[in-house]
Image 1: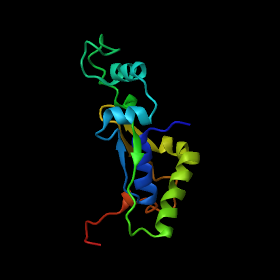
Image 2 (image 1 turned 180 degrees about the horizontal axis):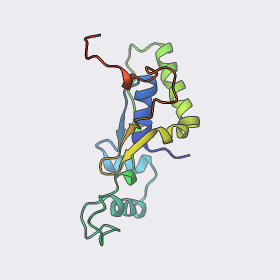
Image 3 (image 1 turned 45 degrees about the vertical axis):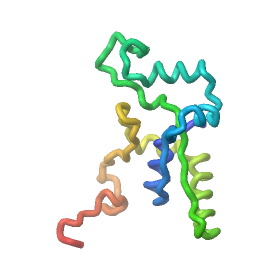
Length: 144
């Protein structure tokens, strides 16, 4: 099952509080090798994501933004020298959980095709007995 690297990045942050980065790093050719993307596949990706209308597959319709969803990449994190086994296992368990069940969260997120950012949907609170089941519902207006 393929899940977009930016989606995994959002889930690791939102569900587990794990700060990670996603994208293709700054070493493009090396990343293509890591992801086993040959020149032919790279050209196909370029045609999907380029903003150059001459090379876009949808060049007849300027209303459609380039499709950043097709940009290859991965999610990455760093471990500190001082990370203990508990912290490392927490991260690895989170990654394992998302590898098997991350797809279940897709309906709870929206995707912005212009910048490939995944954000939680604003869900109706009518069916929930506790209005504070989400951190999005916290109001600090009174300083508390």
